[in-house]
Image 1 (tube, helix red, strand yellow):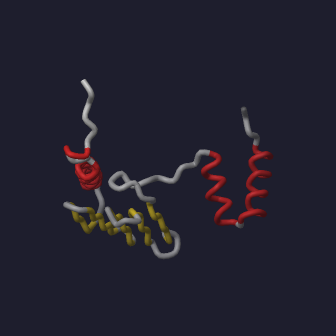
Image 2 (cartoon, one colour):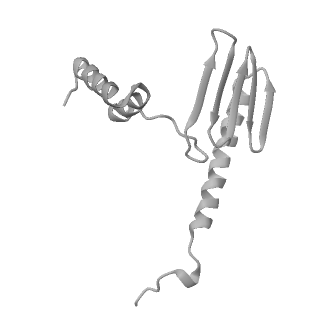
Image 3 (cartoon, helix red, strand yellow):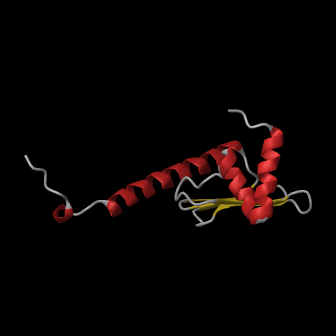
Length: 128
């Protein structure tokens, strides 16, 4: 089924009237399949703020502070657990930052698996 532009506008306008601008855009994004990006490490939302045209400042970070990427003018600051860089950003440095995020995500996944694993005494015994 195709939902045409006029219908999309009508849906959005109805949501705005009923719920207000902020909630309507969130609901509309979920309805249309526009998912917000999530943190690879913890799964929280990513905060993205930009004043690039006015001051040259941008920040992109996990809301749980797993990682932070701040740009001011042409100087970048990248930080996560096990990695910190301040200076002019190049492709190899950004790649190593992404690799560290992937490594931290794997560590967190293993940690959560261990945390949620049941003790031997709590496991159900298989009838055999």
